[in-house]
Length: 97
Length: 431
Image (cartoon, rainbow over all chains, first blue to last red; front, top):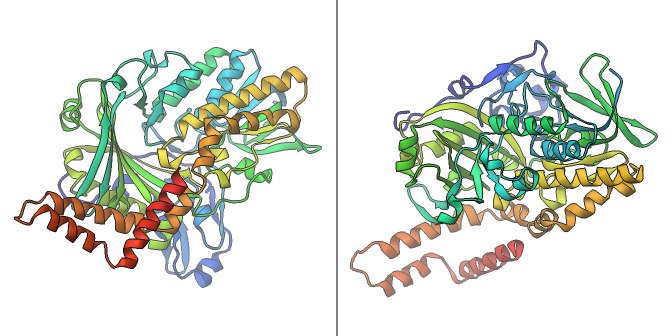
């Protein structure tokens, strides 16, 4: 790690093991709410894995890199995220911490 | 597999494993369900495990458990942008049996701990999600899992499903948590040569240091950072209330990078290689956010019951104690052959009269207080740094002059009064 070099979220995520399910455990319930009622799209900011990315007219949900922390469910100002656990044995696999 | 057990414990973390261990030891037929590939694969903490509560479950555990380092020094850094006021305590009594606390890596530790419960006779099933509690006639009688034909029955279901606590919520034991009731923490495990760690932290072999970071570590918003020594890695993390991240529009991983590049932290981790990145929530709502913890045929333990003392960075120890008390209540219920809330409420009574409940009550207003009044972190910590800098910089000014200047810099008479009032208020919520 050289001085003052900032590691990107992509580099961080690369350190983590994921055993992604084929089906998303995160669902945006009403896509219209993101488009019309949510100018801040704050989930794209506070999600620690940058799972949520705004793509012009829709929210892309990269569930495969989810840490299953639950903050999107609680932090979404419109309670617009249906949040479940991934299927047993799937999702993030911490090896150390 | 419509099987019936005496007890089903949902979640193999410190609370769930402690409960399953105690029950299995007493000869109870207990099933421990874990959704991850193995216990610990979904579990995260900064890394401090307290000896006393762990020893209450497994005496002399330090002789065989996968621990990192016994902590002999605890430091606290009050950080400004390019400075820090540090205080701490180091004592050799913590470096020998019975020790005070240890750093651990949870993926390793939880696997070991769950294995000990299995040795006692608990049945551990991994890779299984509990979707909901099965409720009949107002009583929890089992769980529905994501396995085919996955209904399982028990006299008591113990919910140790962690901070998200979805099962207790679905039973109506608590509402969805608010963003100011949970902290979001991110951390990295940074690989560094063992000898380098010992040199940098002034340690001998099998000694460790914890450093808690306040102030600029979270850019002045309510939260803390931490830097802990493991055997040949460091755990560096930062957490703040989710509401704070939202309000200030801060990306948690950028905050972590900010701490990593902070001049007070950078030298400790220089040359280290990040090997894992982790994010997790911490229940920090305290006493007022605690859910109902006992019902007919059901108990709630650990993070799921919001059992965290944020001020003292304690959680796993409260979790273990709650798991033990839950086991005790189950044994009482078994003896009485009555699994109603009235009998299981023994758990709540024991919990609230122990140090767990007492500490939850003691700090019931602390998080809310420091959240409501940000000046402690964004104003008084920088002020403290400036005062120390002025006092210890030898520049020809007399110490009286320096003291006068420091006092002048606090501000107007009104601001001085406010400082005094804030100091009194802080004392009040902490006393």
